[in-house]
Image 1: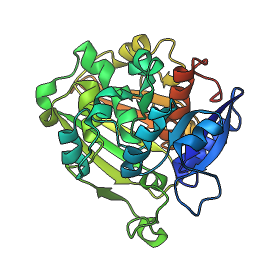
Image 2: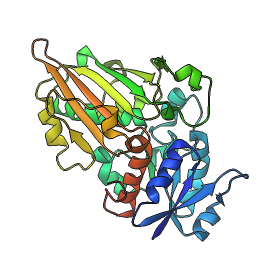
Image 3: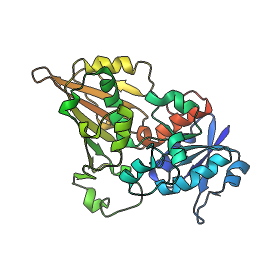
Length: 316
């Protein structure tokens, strides 16, 4: 058994990582705390080495990941980061979308973006993996094959209408995530400036003016449902060809679309297509569990690739 440290194990994504690791046949979790009052192994690079930790998951705020990741890497410990700390390629881009200085542009350039369906080979050789955001996971799995196939009228623009469960906002309570604010409600947030937008632009090779993204909060615990209208034909066949053999992408038959119940507590992304021949419009629906395929499950998938294990281990 190999050992994997989990920092931020009390949060939603971190707790999900621990739960998944506990059923993994080759890896056992070690709880690690970067705060002095934590109950796990106190954070230090030496403690990681002394506890035989080969890889560490950082389910921490971006600023904490920027501090801890270099320390782990310097001591030969591989890092799977679940924050947005290393998802973008330049410090300038990070400053714009996250509103803070980065300070480790070298690691931004080095980090492998951990969307296995498109970045698998780079992830295999990486020592630092930037786990994608939940919204970009669903958006890119739906968009990139269509961009590559050239079936989108990019001049007309792409509209991505996304809904997420409350757990996507993290465990720290805010005025917007209190029960009385969320229940029986439905609200858009970070309109026109959501920090996940650049992940979609980078991965699907889109220009900012071609992509309109709106995130909305659903009064449910987990799950992400995204729809987008496109001018395209034979979208289902494009998906089936692109994702043939992919273990965690399921393509529905034409006219059938997924819902959150289909993917909850799984590492699957389900894609469904509804077409209108008269208007030559197509709506693609992508559904994932924001805490699994959108966070912890994909992180385990990336860990398996980094450590040379079968990609599906601990996830089926």
